[in-house]
Every structure is written in structure tokens, then in C-alpha cells.
Image (spheres, rainbow, N blue to C red):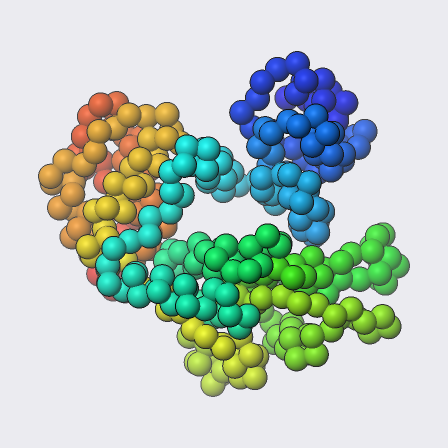
Amino acid sequence: CVTTIADARRAIAGKAFSLILADMRLPDDNSLSLLEWMKEKRCTVPVIIMTNYGEVENAVTAIKLGATDYLRKPVQPDILLELIAGIREEDSGKPSFYRGESSKTQEMYRQIELIACADISVLLRGASGTGKEHVAHEIHERSHRRDRPYIPVDCGTIPEDLAASEFFGHLRGAFTGAENDKAGLFRTADRGTLFLDEIGNLSYRTQVMLLRALQEKRLGDTKEYPFDIRLIAATNENLEKAIAEGRFREDLFHRLNEFTIRLPLLTECREDILPLADFFLEEANSKLGKRVEGFGREARNRLVAYHWPGNMREMKNVIRGAVLLTPDRKWIAPDSLVFPMTERDGAGVS
């Protein structure tokens, strides 16, 4: 652990590292200069940049300079572990996501293939934990924009009073606290893909601003900037109900909904349950440094019988916990599978 860019350069020059986790801002410089230095030295160690909220454009610049990914602060350990696992999987050539063999999953991927290169807005609809962010990234990676920025945004984390600045940027001095120019998410994602997760959480006022930008394809009041983005939105909410209740604009819904992909529940793809469990077991072994052999017969029966209200995300957590409880070179027993919801609690309701 070092606290300055100068010390980081000395450490990298003198020792081999598997991964670098770097704050964007350090006392003597920022990590963009470190990335430039690493590029000059042809140093290929993976770098994850940590940024404050509102520094997304700097993070995109970092990725262009060679950073592997970025992470918003405060750092959430689960997300950091997923990024590290993804880097390991890329290095090993192993897939980072189980695609599924069920008919519903295969149909979903057929639709992804059909629309990936068509520059139309896509609305992903599915329950929590069904993999909407994975599908959004898959669409971007299969499109002609794959070498351009992919910017995911959790709409539930954007305060209404900062939404205009976050989406569309501002000039220095535009309001109290605006110490620097800010490009905003639309300009940062220009020629790439902007993924708006949980679009139903946007306030009505923010929806109006978003609709205006999408209709005019330009940003700014005094100086206008054209933009070119692929927009993907996702929701687990019934937007038709939200429209009827006056909480969501119908015209914005139609603007976002040029094509809809529905993500199936895990219980609708029962033939994927055991292969997916094996995939998550291998992933947990890798992340946790364990060597658990697999699932015993009764444990496999429990996996198939359970209703998985939290879908793939819940399964991933359950199996990670089971791996922690199981000694190396042993098989997972049924009592190691700790489900957050029992049948009595309503796990059978989807």
C-alpha cells in the first residue's frame, strides 16, 4: 500500500503485482498520470480506479488510458470481488457468465443477437436478480459501439436536485459548489452506450429533462452539443401501472421502448438451475480460495425444489455461503444451503 503516485511508480518498477487498486486523486497527482506512465513503460498489470460519485467522465478517460474498470466510492466489497473475479476469468479464458440452455434463455439471447447492431433504444424488463445489467453489457459488446464507452447508471442513486448536472453537465460557477466544468453522462457516453438501470426510480421532473434531450439529440442552453448514444434502460417495475398513476411519462416510455427484452425468472428456466449452481460453485471456489468438490444428491434436490424469489443473484449468494461452510474436498450438504426465504415465508410467490 502506498499513498502517492511517486511511491506507486517505484513499487511497480521494483516488484511484480497481479492487480492495482488506485484512488483517482492522490496527494501528489491523479491516477491518470500513473496510467500514462504505465503505458509508456508497457506495464500490463490490471488497474481498477476508485472514484467519487460524479467523476464518471474521469473514470472513462482512465479506461481509455488502459484501466480495466472503475469502482465508485464508498467501495462495496462484493462489487470489488466481482471485478477481480472478472479479471481472473478474462486471464484464464473462462466465461464470466453462465448463458443458460433453457428455451426461454436461448430466445432471450436470440433477441440480443438480432438487435445488438441496430441503433434502437432497448427496454429490459425483469425481476430483481435476473441479470439485466449483464444483458445490457452483452448488447453493447455485440454492437458496433463496443470500442466506445459503456456507462451504467443506477437511477435510484441520483438525487433530483443533481440530476440535470449528472446527466447533462454544467459549467464552472453555474451554481454554488460548481468548481469545475462537468461533461455529464450523456457527453461522457457519446458514441457509446448509456445504460439507465431502474429507470422507474427517476423523478417526474428528471423524466421531463431526459425526454427533451432524447427528442432534440442536443445538450446545453447557451452552447449546444450534439450527442450520439445507444440508450438501454431497465426496470423491475410495472411501468404501465406507473403511467396510469401519473408517476411515469407515457411519451418517455415509448421513447425508451423501441424494443423490449423480457428476462425470465429462474423458476421459468428450471433446466438451468443445476448448471448455474455448478457455475457459481466454481466461481465461489476461485474467489474464496476453496476446493469444494460439488453438491451432494440431497443438496441438488433442494436447489431444484427451491423457488428462488431472488433469482440468479440469490443463488449466487446462497452458494457462496455454502462454499464457506463446506470443508475443502468435501461435497456440499443440504443443511449448508441457507435460503433467505423459506417456503413458509413466501418463497413460492414469484
